[in-house]
Image 1 (cartoon, rainbow, N blue to C red):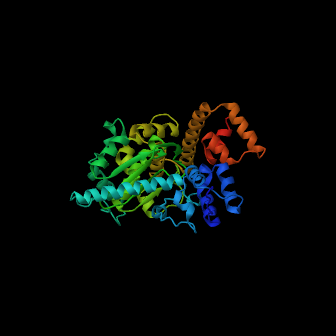
Image 2: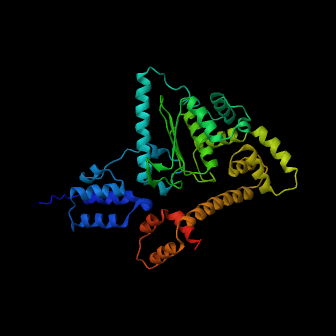
Image 3: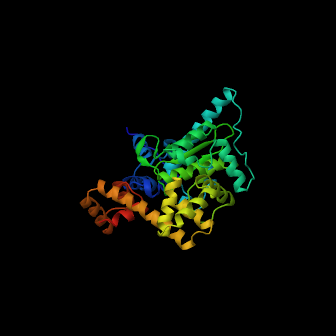
Length: 371
């Protein structure tokens, strides 16, 4: 005799809301709806199968009411956008995994008689950018021109932070599952504050310059003693908290020290070249992104807001172009045409199209432009 189970409709409603555009699978939705209205009663194996497909913990399916997941880190989003009010299972599972690592390391360090990490919250309530920047340089033993003699700025800073007792984790996927890619549109990095084991997680799907900025930005959060989920876009022009403005400013000062910036900008601006080229050349010298340099130039009165906005737009377009060119080279063009046609006829759900092409709502719309 086949044993079946009844799942609470409220729990199924909650599960559907958790799936999101990146993980929703059409056949899973159909199955869940059939369970909800009582058309079918699932077996143990069927529940287990849906659990694996949707990444919803197996035990949740047997609850009478939806679970209340305590996601403290979500309270510290850089930008409180509606798009991140319901975090993806990929983000949640990554946060949970990193919290477990922090817990384990804390217990280990306490067991080995280690003391609390003195840099955590050392600059709490400080607002002077110069003072905080000097502290970061002191802790990491960074000369003002540290970037000139490094081949890989990210690895260089990562090693320095590791030596200061900060755990640096980076990945572009959930655990070892290559089918669960972390979405850069959802988050770029996050920080978990712990007095013994502060941790920074970097989304490896970000660009080289993006990861570098995030790494320093999150380290400043540790010095200030504040958790953070860094979900800002490329421009950092949206309304953010006072702490975020401080972290951005300190990061920019470490990457592009004001005194060196003034010297380099003055020298290059004397040459007969477009302002865009000057920004590129200065960024190349400091080995960072053009947006960071453009922001510095804007704050120092070297360029107008329009130039800064254009720099941001150019960088974003370039990143999207590179992504789409790479993606389209991996996909058969006829296959992509079939998917788009099926969508237009209503025969295929967007969620299924995202799954087939390994994209999300934002990247899929860009992909269609290449047809």
